[in-house]
Amino acid sequence: MEVNVITTYRCNARCGMCSIWQYPTRRSEEFAPALLEKLPDGISRLNITGGEPCLRSDLAEIVDILTTKTTRLQISTNGYFTERLERIGRDNPDLEIRISIEGLAELNDRVRGLRDGFDHAMRSFTALRRLGVGNLGFAMTLSGENCRELLDVYGMCVHLDCELANAVMHNSFYFHTEENKWGDTTDVEKAMKSFICALLSSRRPRARARAKDWLRAYINLGLLSTVQGKPRLLACRAGTDSVFLDPWGRVLACNGSAQPLVMGDLNTQTFGAIMASPEAEEIRRLVRACDRSCWMTGNAVPAMRRHPLPALKWVAAAKWAVARGREPRWG
Amino acid sequence: MRITNGEPPIRGDLLEIVDIQAPKAHRLEISTNRDFPDHLGATARRHPDITIRIGIEGLAETNDSVRGIRNGFEWAMRSSHALRDVGVDDLGFAVTIQVDNAHDLLNLYEFVSAEGAEFAQAVPQNSYCHTDGNEIHGVEAVQVAIHCFIGVFLRSLRPREWSRAYPNRSLVDHVGGAGGASRAWLRRTLSSSLGSARGGYAELGTSVYASRTTPSLAKSARRNGQRRCAPNRSNSASTVAVHKGGAY
Image 1 (cartoon, rainbow over the protein chains, first blue to last red):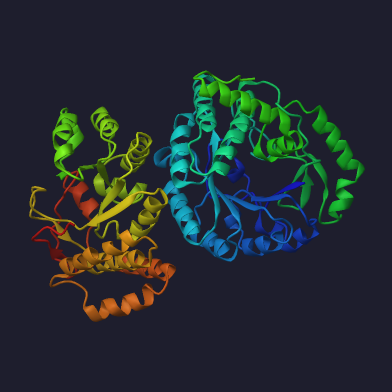
Image 2 (image 1 turned 60 degrees about the horizontal axis):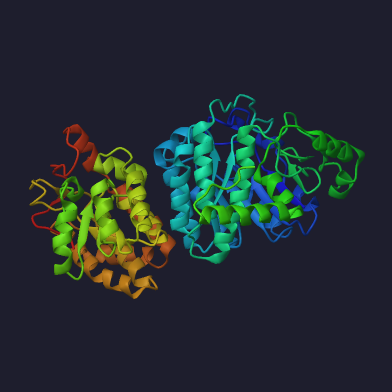
């Protein structure tokens, strides 16, 4: 089970592909950290996200509670609030932190609407590395606007020896938009295919990092399918293998639906009761019938863990093809 | 042997120069500013054992402001990655320490170190930059920045970094001149700032911003319509003219 905790819908960024910042939650209505005590122990991966989680003044308290629930706690941030991240990182060096950037300096700052956002992200990165936070990385949301810098960002991550998680722009209730349109996908597809080939021929020094790149190539194959309007590579198990907790304390199946798929309310129910409830079962039925074909880290990685064979077979065949100077099979 | 600026790759015959000079030196260094034109790429591919130092003044905003080059930081990064990819191992960045970038230097140093590149420092100088008007503003801030570097170098686990501390010590004296911080002030500052890396940053930031009493070099450059090596003539007490080169 993976849990994504949406701590707030407040955000200091002004991204073009996400309108969360136009619909901020009020501080008073956001869940209190104590609510998170109701999450079960032994969660395989917990992601703290937003909005911008650093805007919550009680983020340290949230982290303290969630570290007892999982061995893999991740924070997704735009890296603007370096000092707040430092305070968290100093006490929790085992955290995974993913800093969102959309390209190198100029493009990032334009797409995210953050003045000097890239510099702030870099300062946070160096500060966290200095503090010994081992699992650091960047996250990039691919669109027609920034696809040309995907390989530049990947190159930077390789040389910094850190992770690069990427997604493609989506429409959903979570992003508060249905206006993202791909239009002509030629450039995006070309950039993604180049990126997938670069991942398959990864030159990272550590074997584990190379292997992660190869599997990330498969994730990107799924993203390519999304951009091309094809069906998902693997069945979505949102609501079963992964859930979201929204800022009001409601448990949702995913963040990619047009309307929130509410399974229950953690304020009034226990987590176990929510997952076993008839409402949750009805939501899972809706997920099985869902035709949105979204492919996000939150629902792709659990699906790959559940069914690893297709990914491993594709990676093996694709690496063989790339080694012989050919293109992999694109699905 | 150092092949240096203006901007060496602008010469179309850079490869020819390096072909001739490479056998004559154990270590051949090219100083460049940002671009990775074909000339430098071709040179690096044929001579991957050369040393390359890319001029940079801070993270993106600071660098582009001080250098007057749009997206200069991005291009420096791209150049660095491309040079690594063609096999250049001795790759680094060179920074000129001044009040405009003193607040960003340790971040830049750590970013460069995380990329596995070398980091060299200098201070503004007159002479072949075709000016005698360069002055160092906010001398105290620059001195504290250099001292922070000294602390970082001495704490490094890489012996090569230790040897960097000494020439930086000379930079402190060189920058100081008549308008510099007193030794006693520096000792007080450093005893509180260099105890830990974080303390160093906090103290550095405070000192730098407190000393920003003079028009910045970059603003002055823009006002004068100049792009680089812009002289800045201010009579502030914390400004000292540089009469001889201070680079190492």
